[in-house]
Length: 380
Image 1 (cartoon, rainbow, N blue to C red):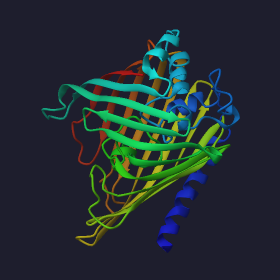
Image 2: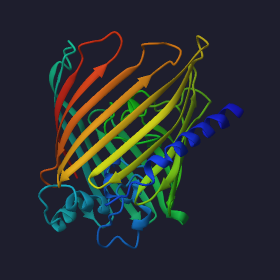
Image 3: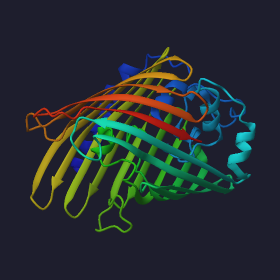
Image 4: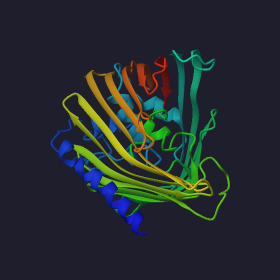
């Protein structure tokens, strides 16, 4: 119990250590975290009764899922239509199309990629790759209840019942979902998602609750601790949570995850932050990773880090630079992985994105595994 409290304090301390870096970056203007940073002070007309711009936007302001990702709600769709693309279009007819009725809505994400890698493997050397094909359905018989389903051709599946609009803008969620932790990036290959086993295929069953009231937000979940499995394989339960402060200037938070299974014991603690200055947006996360192999009685302590800097020179254009680092064991030398990424995102029309990125991968010993890709993303 003491060690668990110690880890929580470490996570909070890491988050607070980032505070001076972000509080003095004014925000002009989320779910992809870069949109949180860019549009944190923007409210679309007609939504002022539900949100307060001085607090910034939470994930629930743009998504059906309170922790972000998946289906966009009405406000999120308006942000994507009115603020993101080069070409703006009237969306009144579109809103009527995606709402089967007042209480039923649909959405979707489709990603198709061409990837070229120097690594000599048949599936990634030079390939077309259907990366994502997800369909969302949300049924809301009342203002306080939503039944949600996300089903994807690649095995992505989230489904839950959501009791929402509770006091302090809180909610209760039960079902299968990705546990709340850190920056919920749309790139599941980033080390802070992939190495922590919190990617798009790591849904877990459990109960989650949270709130976003004023400048404060928090989410906590009790889960089976067996990602991807229908039934838990042991009597232990996992825990995942995140909490922090948000404003129109910046967001800062800390996260904690604990999961003891039959063969391993995993514990994460870390901090993350987002900020926006003029046309620049910055995202960052650092996590401590402790993994114990219960069969071999071995333990490793490592870390994982992510940094992203975006520049938005004009509507519909984003230049980005990203850095990933993963050190699985601090006691070992030359075992870390690093990745430098440079890219360009273009949003030519509403609900469309073309992304091109080049990745430089570094490890010991050095390998020829750099890669570049072009991605088409269609979404609504």
